[in-house]
Amino acid sequence: MMDWRPLVDTLWGHGTALAPLAMAVRALTMFFLVLFLLRLGGARSFGRKSSFDNALVMMLGAIAARGVVGASPFNSTVVASAVVVAVHRLIARLCVTQSWLAKLVEGEPVPLYRNGVVLHENLKRTNISEADLQESRRLELQRPSLGAEEAFVERNGRISFVRPEQ
Image 1: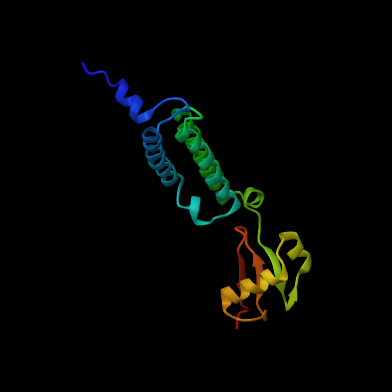
Image 2: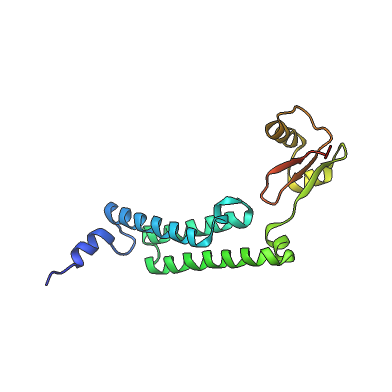
C-alpha cells in the first residue's frame, strides 16, 4: 500500500512554513471554494457594490487568505467563509421584506440637489463636495452644469440624477 503522506505534505503543506507549491495549491483550491460560496450567496454579492456587500468581500478575502497562507486551519477558514456568506444572504433576504432593516444595513438615498438648490448640509453629511457633484453631473449626463433635475447620493455611494418629467 502506497504512503500518500509525503505527496500530500508536498502539495498541501502544513503550518505557516509553506513551500511555494503548497501555497499555490491552497490558493487554487480556495479560489474555487470562494467562487462556489459567492455563487451560492447570490448575484448581489458583487452586483450592487454597497457597503453591506463590500463588507462581505473584505471579510471573505481576509478569512480565505488565512487558509491560503496557513495562518489558520484550512477547514476552519472554509467554514468561517461559508458562515459569512450565509449571514450575508440571510440579512439580504430579510432586507427585502423588512424596510427598517434595509435602512439600517444599507442606508437610504440622500438628496444633494433639488429645485435648483444645492443642499450644502447634505453635501457635508455625505462628504461630497460641490465639485464632486458637478463632476458626476458631467460624467453621468454629459452636461456642464446642474439644471432642473434632482441629484441624490444613493445607498451604494453613487450619485444619481433624476430629470423632471416633461
